[in-house]
Amino acid sequence: MIKKVYLAGPEVFLSNAIEIGKKKKDLCKKYGFEGIFPLDNEINFDLLRPYETGLKISQINEELLKKCDLVIANITPFRGPSADVGTIFEIGFAKGLGLIIFAYTNTKILFTERTVGFVGIRSNTDFTNLRDHNDMKIEQFGMTDNLMIDGGIVNDKGMIFSGDVPEHELYTSLVVFEECLKYMQLHLI
Amino acid sequence: MIKKVYLAGPEVFLSNAIEIGKKKKDLCKKYGFEGIFPLDNEINFDLLRPYETGLKISQINEELLKKCDLVIANITPFRGPSADVGTIFEIGFAKGLGLIIFAYTNTKILFTERTVGFVGIRSNTDFTNLRDHNDMKIEQFGMTDNLMIDGGIVNDKGMIFSGDVPEHELYTSLVVFEECLKYMQLHLI
Image 1 (tube, rainbow over the protein chains, first blue to last red):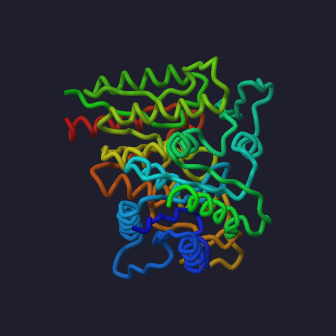
Image 2: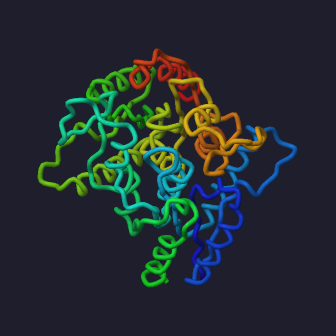
C-alpha cells in the first residue's frame, strides 16, 4: 500500500502554487509515495462569502490530513522568525491524529538567531537567558523553531531537514524537500 | 467531573509566567474549571543539555494536553502577524485529539490588516487578491488568524474571543480570557 503524504507549507500562497504542488507530488511519486497537496489557491467557492470560504478550506484540509499516513511540512520561516502558522497547525493536528511528521526548512539559521535578528534583545540582557524588549524569553534550545515544533516531530519517528538555498528560491526550492524524501524512501517503505 | 482546561499561550515567555499562570488557574476555578498551565519557565533540567531540555518540555506539554478536555489558547499576535507557533501547535494537537478549543486575542485587528501592516503589499497589487512583495497571497477571509486556526476552532464547538487592551498589557491582560471563561461556564458545564 503506497503511503499518502500530506504536503504542508506556505507554498500554497505562491502565485504558481498549483505548479509547485505538482512538482512536489511528482517527487513523492519518484520516491514511492503519494503526495497530497492542500487546497487553497486552487478553489473558487463563488457562492460563499470569504469567511465561509475560509472555514470550508480548513475543513477540507483537515479531512485530507485524516486520509494521510505522513506529513512533510515546509517550516521555512514565513513572515517572522517562525514557520507559517497554517503549516504549524497542520503539524500539530497530524501529531494528534498519530501521523509521522517530517519537516524541512530552506535555511540553516536556527530559531534563537532568527528570533534575535527579528525582535532584538533587551538592553543588558543576560546571554544565558535571552529576553526581548517586552522582557519575554527567547528560546535557547538549539532548535529549528519553537520547542513544541521540533519536539513534536523529533520525539516521534519524524525528522527535520535543513539546508541553505539561494534567497530568491526560499519558498520554491525543492532540494531539501527531496533530501527528506530520499531519507523516507530508505527508512519508511 | 470538573473539566480540565489546558492554558496555551505566549505568557510562558514572560518573566512572571508562573504568577500569570496562577491568575489564569484561579480564574478557571472561579468559573468551574481546572486550569492546567504548560511547563516552560518553571522547570530546571540541570542535567540535560538545552536541546534535550526542549524535547523534554515538548513531551511533558503533550502529555498534559492529553489529560485535558478543553483548551483556552491565547492567540494574541506574537513576534509577527500571527499567534505564537508553540500555541498554534498545541491548538492543532488538541484538535487532532478531539478536544474542544477556545481562543482569545487581545486585539480586535483582523489578520489581513495585521499582515498588510507587517509585510506590506506588492506595488500594483489587486485589492481583491492581495499579494506581498514575494508575490505570496495575503489571506482575505475576515478572520482572526490563518484560516486553519479560525476554522480548526470555529468549525467545531469552539469560539474565538477578541478585545482591545492597553498596549502595555498585550500579553498580560486577562479581561478577554475571563470573557471566554464566562461563555464556557454558561455553555459547557
